[in-house]
Amino acid sequence: MRRNSLIAGLYLVLLFFSGVAVGAFGLHLYTNSVRANGPRDPNVFREHYIAELRTRLKLTDDQVSKLGPILDETRRRHREFAEQHRSEMKAIQDDQVSKIRALLMDSQQAEYTKLLEEREKQRQRQHP
Image (cartoon, rainbow, N blue to C red; front, side, top):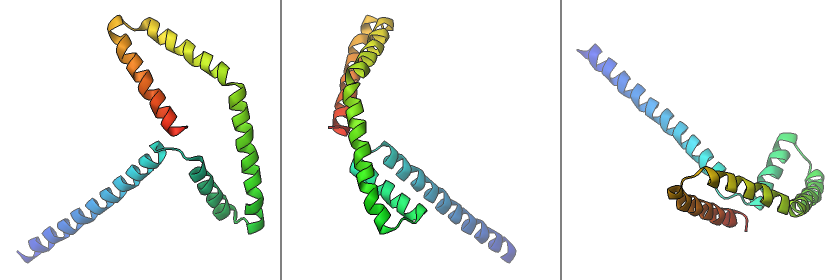
């Protein structure tokens, strides 16, 4: 009888630690999902990027101070490029929308319009 109690106790301990492991794994997946799908603040990204470079490459303070202007220039160049090609990107997007609309039935058009409006609002919130 005592042996059965010992085995039952070991199974309970094993079950408990299995629950802890599954919970920890679930938390890890959740936090990565929230981080990946959350708002993308360029300043937060920049801080994380600099911290990762500092840690993994063991950058000196002097190297970190020189990193800021490099990242500033890259951001400026990306924005200039995006502005120069905004009309082309809009034309590609408009072409996609018109092709999708062409394959939708009349009953689906209103919902597609609503979906596009929701996505535009979401884009504006993420990239004001």
